[in-house]
Length: 395
Ligand code: HEM
Image (cartoon, rainbow, N blue to C red; front, side, top):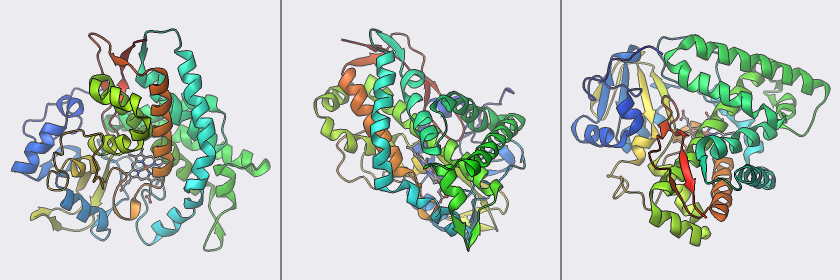
């Protein structure tokens, strides 16, 4: 990885890969909201960073001036294949999204819950007798990788391969486009083979389902299916494992909240909403279609916008005590799953995975703390979450 020049000034030269931002972005955002609510950088060929809820909302809803065709900010502009519906703009977006919705209804998600619970128990079983573990690698990452594999009708063992692709496409690949391209090509080949296999042996899985659906009477091309599957893999895994990980990080570092949730598991769904608000993992992007303005700030055509829903969720104009994590916060209409036409279609699934993961962990380990001298490593790039989280399990 090339050594990066540190950001000299967050308002005019911000860098979301700067280690200070990766470690603790919230004070930076707070300061910007007060002093320069739409920051800019010439890095990554020009990016704006809005920090106020209203501005982020306005951009997410304005699909005429802001396109999703480039959804990730990277060094250089590698020609990456699209990932419908995330990178689709109107009018194509509506149909690309609609075909997926039946697989993500509450009823469809409910069917995945028993296996999700069993996976959590199996991961906890592997930790039995231990007093130390890496809650990110040994637990958080285990769950969505395997749930996603199951949803796609692929062996859960492929979870390991998925971890590598996620790391290469969304973390390493942000600075090293060749690595992203390679991972994306590998995923493309993998899913093309899966599509061919399912054509011969259809099952009750998402790949077979995508082979059956029609848009305007036409089947989806193999390429469209492979690209959508790649999106579901990346979107479904990283954000959810990041949220399970950061929730455990919060509980390992806040004894009162941990004791309260262990004693009152009924509060877990409310606490999860607060973790989603306060530690929103996903920062996607938009490309500016034509010169425009936001919150009084002129924006130049072709540059990018870092659309960080986490910045919206920390705006004190909308959330009182926005930088405080209040696990029984009553009013919490956060934007962690996005706003507007691209709002996450996997939110019910993600919430179920987070709830089951926390219920099972707290039932097994009601008392745990960060290990003494622990180094917590946070991912940088599109999705933020702990990738290394050493904890001590007390019995
Ligand atoms: C806690 C976990 C998750 C978070 C925080 C999250 C967040 C988001 C956000 C912020 C967007 C909007 C992107 C934009 O406006 O450009 C989005 C879109 C999307 N998410 Fe999620 N997501 C999560 C889990 C999932 C899961 C589990 C899946 C499916 C397996 C999924 C599939 C998608 C898809 C397909 C889109 C694109 C929707 C569209 O463009 O119409 N996500 N997600």
